[in-house]
Image 1 (cartoon, rainbow, N blue to C red):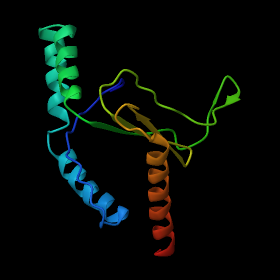
Image 2: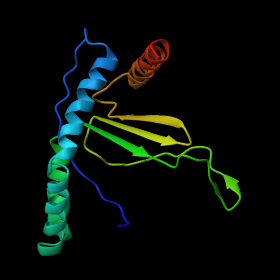
Image 3: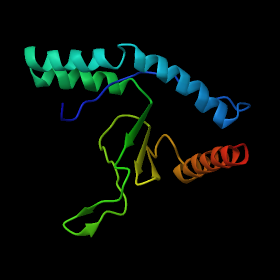
Image 4: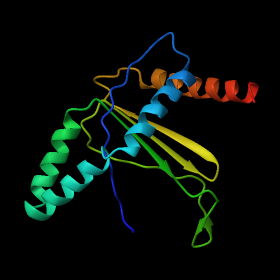
Amino acid sequence: SWGNKTGLILQPVHCCQDLHPLDHVRRMKAIMDQKKQSYEAHIPYIALKVFASCLGPKVASWCSRRISCNTTMLVSNIMGPTEEMAIAGNPVTYMRVNISSLPQALTIHMVSYAGKADLQVLVAKDIISDPEFLAQCFQESLLEMKNYIVRNK
């Protein structure tokens, strides 16, 4: 079916200094694969849909806001088109996702488009005082993982 559908999975993130970034990704992927096979992502979607239809959109919005206010970080991963596209004859060079007025201190969006990945990091400056350093850490970590994979093919 068509339309926007949002699943919600709550996952604690444990930061380990001695763990290689790729090992951390493998560990988190295994956990997320298990959760995707369960009903964890579907139940909040269905519950909010029922709340909206039975109790009204204000109640559904309140429930959604209560959940998001009790989380620290939001990660979204959106798969875009695999081939380049054009709108009214103008080529689309990249795609961005923007969500504003979220209560999280850290929001990470990863969007893929035509074989390229775009990482966006949004921070609350009063909580994360040096967002440039954080973005640099993400970039170095992603490059380290990419180089490791290329070397060990």
